[in-house]
Amino acid sequence: MGYTIAEKILAAHAGGKPVRAGDVVVASVDFAMLHDARASNALKMIQKIGAGNEKFALPFAAKTAIVLDHYSPPPNIEAANVHRDMRAFADKHGAVLYDVGDGICHQVMPEGGHLTCGDLIVGTDTHSVTYGAFNAFGTGVEGTDLSAVMMTGKLWFRVPETIRIELKGRLQPGVWAKDITLTMLGRFGAEGANYRALEYVGSAVSAMEIDDRMTLSNHAAELGAKAAILEADEKTFAWLKAHKARAPKAVKADADATYAERIEIDASTLAPQVARNHQIDDVVGVPEVKGQKINFALIGTCTNGRLDDIRQAAAILKGQRIAKGVRMIITPASREVYLAAAREGLVEALTQAGASVEAAGCGTCVNITGHLIMGDGDVAISSANRNFKGRLGNSKSEIWVGSAATVAASALTGTITDPRTVMGGKWRAVA
Image (cartoon, rainbow, N blue to C red; front, top):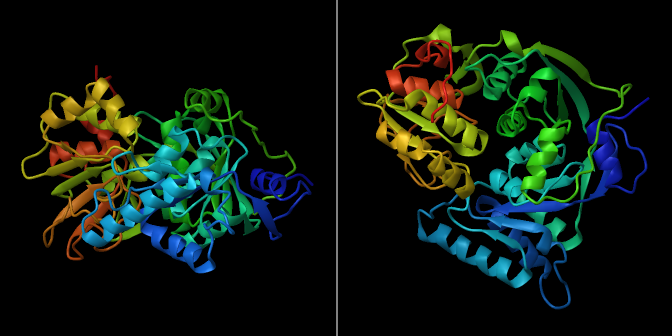
């Protein structure tokens, strides 16, 4: 019997002997990430153990990215002090530092060339599964786990079962990877793939650009996935080369690999989807809720703040004006994304349409910075990954989740709107 991608990557990092789902292994990590919302636990554990001094070094710190993105910019003195400590730690131990405004951890990690095909990557965030878009095993850990990685370069893992998902056909114009994952959440429920790896394959995946592939892997966190891994192709190799990543070691599943489940989805039949009622798995097609009034629109986050997402919004809003009474915020996933959007004229188009474009970071998504606080009874539509009650600062408000295109179309009309209808079913270039 053959092996899945997850089994092969973990085996390669645990001494090379074959492993199966359910096995427990100690594996060497290629690169790690620690962000500010989990930094205190990690730094306290390192201090408690006595690591980081002359007798007990942190040999893996140089292969760890320290990212200041959740408290970005810091909303209070406590957060500012956490940032102060993280900067000092990075300086002392040679860790890679991404400061306020550089971007969201899951965007700057691949942009910085810190990972490649076949890698094992850990980060202090559930959405570390994003790195699977590059044929790597990316997964989330706690801050205390990250401290162990910086001390030893290793961590233990239970090898997950794998669900193979074949996406046939091709997404229709106006439908995006976000709509695939929302469809799956509606079908399997939140945590429906708990501690399982997902393998995404098929013609629809091959047709996606890297930005959409990152959304596909990233959003698997809401399904509870331990990892969400795509096969590598020429698009993968070209993107990694452009970002100066190490030479790829592409991994492909064996034809006779054992899977917990095999799923086929005809991507060409999918329509734009939205999640509602403070539940990411309460999913309906956009046409079913046509006319639902909104007050706020948010495009950004680690799930949908990339350049293609901003292009989608600008394609709808260029030369237009968002609906009266709607407030719209765009949060690019990184400084690099922001600069690219500015060069393409997207920032100007969106600003003229009435949107506000802010610095890259996670603060608005999790309402740490308070940039988007809603009033009682207000309704927001967001391209974020979650719509938990109170996530945008008010438990008496309502959050819907959809693709960047759906968010932009809804901002234009003031009600939740199918993006295919505002463009007449055809998508035009911004330029």
